[in-house]
Length: 86
Image (tube, rainbow, N blue to C red):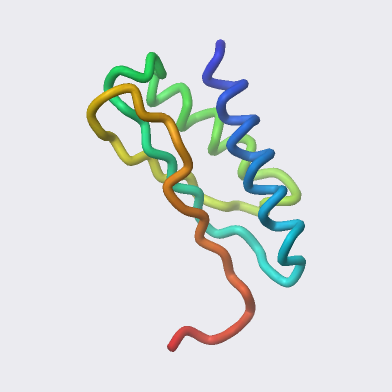
């Protein structure tokens, strides 16, 4: 099940980002997944949901953005920095 190892790496990278800005909490992780990336999207989404529901993420949501080609990358991390939106 390589989707689990991919989800673990996405979470590791998100955790590194959160460590650089300790006053933030993660709300959403968006990942671009290409049609030729050899990823079972629903399995990957399930793995991300399970991992993001645990600490240190506290119920962050995964968003899968489908695209063409072999792409697999984090598109963005949505964080709550405690400041009101402008």
